[in-house]
Each structure stands twice: as C-alpha cells, then as structure tokens.
Amino acid sequence: MIDNLIFLGPALAACIILAGILSYFGNHILTRGIIFIDIAIAQIAALGTMIGILLGFAEESAAVQVIAYIFTILIISFFVMMRSRKTDISQEAIIGIIYCVALGLALLLAEKIPGGSNYITKTITGNILWVTWGQVLITFIIVFIVGIIHYFYAKKFIEISEAIRDKKPMESFKFPELIFFITFGFVIVKAVFIQGIFLVFILLIAPAAIARLFTQNWHKRFVWSWIFGILGSVTGIYISYEYNVSNGPAIVCLLGFFVFIAAFIRIFQKMRDKKIISQMVSNVKKMEK
Amino acid sequence: MTIIEFMLAPLMACLLLILINVYFGIHVLKREIIFIDIALAQIAAFGSTIAVVIHHMFHESHGHEHSEDSILAYFLALSFIILSALVFSFLKNRKISIPLEAIIGISYAVATTAAVIILDKAAGGDVHIHDMLVGSILWVTWGQVIKLFVVVFIVGFIHFIFRKKFIKLSDNYQNKDSKMKNSFFWDFLFYLTFGIVIIEAVNISGILTVFAFLILPASFSAMFSKNWVQRIIIGFVLGAVVSAFGLYFSWNMDVPVAPLIILTLGAFLLMGAIYKRLINLIKS
Image (cartoon, rainbow over all chains, first blue to last red; front, side, top):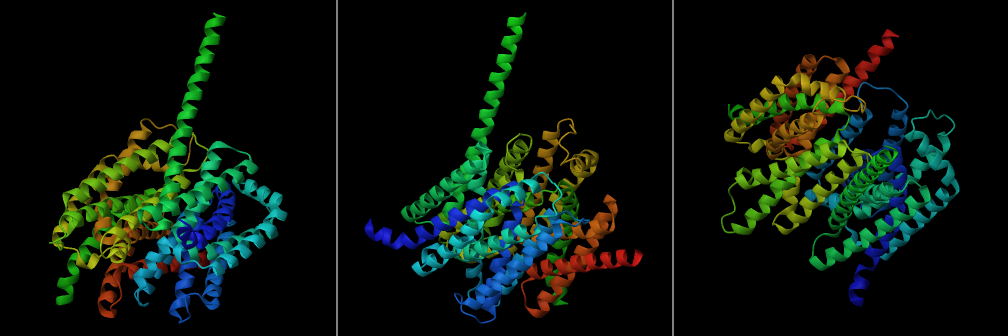
C-alpha cells in the first residue's frame, strides 16, 4: 500500500493541482459558452510541442515549451480578435476547422518523427504516471501564481464572463481579458504536456458542468467543481491502477459518466417538481370551485 | 496506367463521401453545432472498435480478415449511433442549465478515450488509433465503394423527398421559439440517416477526414453563395479537385493522403477568405 502511494504520489499530486485550477477555469469557460475553444487550444499546444520535437529539441527542454507557448498565445489572440468581428462562417465552424487542421498537421508530422503514432496516442492519453516531483513543483508554482492573479481579479473576471454570456458589448474590459487568456494559456500548455488533450478538456468542462446543474452561485460552483474534479481524478487513478487501464482515459470516462448521470437526475427532478406544482395548482383550483 | 487503376477506387470513394458530406455539412453549419458530427463519428468508431477487440478475443489464430466488414461491427456502431441520436435530440428539447455543446464535447472526449482504453487491450493499439483518426482510404475495396454508393443513394433519396422538412428544421435550429410539428421525429431521422452515412464514411476514411469533408467544403461554399444547390456544387467541385490532387501527390511524394487532403482543404479555405476580404476592400 505504502509502495503504491509512493509510486502514484507525483501523479496524484499533479492531478489534484491541475484539477483544482482547470475546474476553476471551467466555470468561466462554461459561462462564456466557449467550450470547444479549449480543445482547439489544447490541440494547438500539443502541435507546438510536436514541432519543437521535430526541430530536434529534447522533449522536456525549455525550447519545446517556449514554442508551445508561442503557438498557444498566437491562437488565443486570434480567437479574442475574431470574437469582435462578423464573418460569413460561424465562429463554432472556425474553431472546428482550426482543430481539424491542427490535428491533421500533427498526424502528418507524426509520420516524420520516429515513433510518431505513439506520440499521437500520448497527446490523447497523456502520461501522468511518468510525472516527476520536479514537474509537480513547477506546475504548483505556475498554478500558485495564476491563482494569486485570479484572486485579485476575481470580481472583474466574473463580471466579464457574465457580460459575455449576456452578449453585452464590452469595451473597457480589454486588459483583464488579456490577463485571463494569458494565464489560461500558461495553465493549458503545462496541463496538456502532463495530462493530454482529452483529460484537460474534461477537467475543464465536466466538474464545472456538474456544479452548474445544481447551483447558480459562483462560490458554490467553484467549491463543487473542485470537489468533483479532485474526487474524479483520484478515483480515476485508483481505478486505473486496480484494473490496469490507462489512467488519463479512465478519469475522462469516469467524469463524463458523472455528467450524464447528473444531467438525467436533474431532468427527472425538474419533471417531478413540475408535476408537484401542477398538482398543487389543480388542487387549489378544485378548492376554489 | 497503374496509378489510375490503383487510385480509381479511392477516388470514387472520395467523390461519394464529398457529395453526401457537403450536403450534410451545409445542414450542420446552419445548425451551428459543428462538433456533434465529430462526436457521432467518434461514437461510431467506438462501436467498431469494440467489435475489433471482440474479434481479436475470439479469433486470435487467424486474425487477418477485415473485421470492419463484420456484421457485428456494423450492428454495434449502428446501435451506438441510434442511442446517441436519441440522447442528443432528447437533451436538446429539455431545459437544463448547461449548454448542449458541453454534453457533446464530453461525449466526444469519453468516446475517444474509451476507444483508447479498449484498444490498449488489443495488440498494436497505436496503429489502430492512427487508423481510427485518418483511416486507410488508399486500401478501400470496390466492394466497400459499392456499399457506400448504395448507402449514399438511399440516404440521398430520403433527404431529397423530405428536403423541405429538413431544410426548415436546420434553418430554425437555434431559434427556440419556432415550434415545428414533430420536430423531435425529424431531428431524430436527420441524425439517424446522418449516422448511417457516418458509419460507412468512418470505416473508409477515419474520423478526422470525415469531419474535414463535412465542414471545410461547406464553409468554403458559404463564403460565395447562399443558395443550397449552388453551395453543394461549389463544395463538391472543391472537394473533388482537392481529393484528386491529394491522392496524386500522396502517391508521388509518399506522404499520408488524409492529412494532405485536410491541409489542402484548409489552405483553400484560407485563400478563399483572403480573396473575399480583398474583394470587399476593393469594393469599399
């Protein structure tokens, strides 16, 4: 048992830290309704890493990360710019196209790197088990700094996200908006490197979605999404260890199923409430008669 | 001569796929829920993946026949598609506080990673994942092309007869106030026919290529026309030219064909957008 814990220690720590920050960001993402931008950004970050490797840098080197950051920041500024323009093609379509072309390019490059299709699998599954304590520390520092920035801007960010949801025009928000996306980009690059595209995506969306189903209050949403994100990650790692399946996908499937179950519970609750209310209404009408 | 003989079946498959996908792509773009397609494609692929693994478990000794063609794979993929078509049309009509995109995205992520988990158990998992994404269109057989033709013909026929219903549904998809009669049924029929095409398409050309064929030519045509027939023609011509080009160059330069086609389509779209902007600038 102790041996297992030592072996799984860095993986657990990394997942808990990243689940914390990603499910926090997820609440903003979900409120803004920009769900698929994340998967596109994550794919671009992975593509940047891949190009870095193709240029001959080592997989863990700073150069590769810098390239990944540049790619990510470019694509994020493109999305922010695009939002204020009117185009013939819907934004959703543009996001889809970017995702598709980026993945296509990654697949083409995979042919040029030795063991490339292995690398494609890795961007899908991540490699949490090979995380070192050093990486955990770096991740923690990044998350800590991002957390402090977000603590100070918390009200502003919530204001912006709600303004975007309500489709209000926004002029005075430019600077905090930039900070939001830059911190987001930093976290995503780090997270994709450790966890792979799909785990990052699901940690962003799933815990926030579950929380959103049951409460409107921002504070409660943050707390519940943390609970679900961390609980899902830890349980997923445990299941993957016990039953010998890859751990990233195990967490993704687990959290995904949680969302479906929560959504159906919510729908049935609402149906029941409606029934009770309509019964009460009809009772009142009967009494009046 | 050899190249023409070798490339004829893949080219025919590409043309059929583009024809039906451009049509569906225009619907999908109008509905503005693009990722539902990649999710459905992935779910279909997940169904066939399960079949591959079951096949491996029972026929370990003689493993070289193409299990994609098996009835089991088709049945599994179809039942997954029907199930998810039901779930998506059901959830669309309900008032829950999270956007439908979140549900779609989660389905996509779960289907992909679940396929990876299952493939991990089978031999040569990495190769299968690669195949699942971009397929192996160069190795398509004439039997598959004929099957694809039959499916495209039947689905196309259904859509031609009920075209007014489907077009009305897609035009008002985001508009929650418009109540169309039996909208649940038509929506379900749309996803079902779409799913049947997707199953064939994914088997031949992989998820990513199908997704590219769906949205890239349709987006290109959106820049130049609003009329349905014109859009289908523009998208089809672009797709046909690009696939012929992609097949030829992948033969000549020894690069994988699917990513080449996707990137070329992307490049054309970019050029189209720049051209459009220039025209607008000159006009103003």
